[in-house]
Length: 417
Image (cartoon, rainbow, N blue to C red; front, side):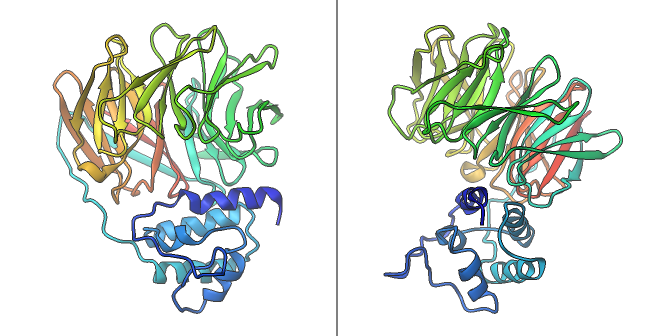
């Protein structure tokens, strides 16, 4: 098995939620667990245990469709199994670890109308992580486990994938003014640039080996690329003209996990969230000094964020199932309970014309949520495909919503009417 395969496969089950009770390992057998009897038990132990601690398998909470996607992800990442073995593993996992009840979606009617469209990615199990809606109307996605970027033409339904250097594990995406697609190489410790016209990829290796998992890239108005490094614990900037990269470690200590990234109306000062602590922060664009703002609830964990025209920062509180608004001028936080409750896990997030949109990701099916700050009213829709886990969203040129559904290997558009 290649080094890339091991790195990516180790991430497959690291992404699985642990909703059941923790199952302790068998003493003296590293990584081994008391797996249930079944025809594919030996196959799972032989082919999976070499790359995974199986605690995540034992404590998973997946539907049959999601188990199929997990096995597809293993194959996309280079697992040494053929299709017949993959089917056996899928059937065993589905029978041995069936999905458990999750919070129920709450449907709230309202003034907006939404139509959902979805397309399967060409590579099953590619785990499309982030979408990127382009000025020409196309939608790109990061095929994290397939080591590819993808492009969708929503008008024709045409899909195309572009291979990346090994390992890449593309995560966040952003375009520059010339139409190049920049990605965060989450498994490769680099920032990459794809020229769609030629398929050529240029790699900018991060200078610190601890900066192994860049997460979200975003250009400021001067063309400087800023990015977060989640588990490595950095914020960084890259000058595309020179290739110069600078990294800074936030002051709050390790484990804070710099995550989402946004600019206010000034377009130059990056604000970011931590997923490992109850803080937001900003970076001085010249000195790279980090200033942190502690949020009042110690349990708060912010994933994605959005900014309205009044320079308010909005985010979903993953741990509390709430929608929060942060005022950068005062540090004040205002909070609303989400429609489907504390365990709904707000994830994908965007702002369109000062209206807030996000996805409740722990529900099956996921729900798309609309919140109007003027009326403080919620409206929700069940995502027909189920959504899997919608990890990120962004507005299209027409004011619709592009989304990536990593748990189903789909990309989609929510057409807002």
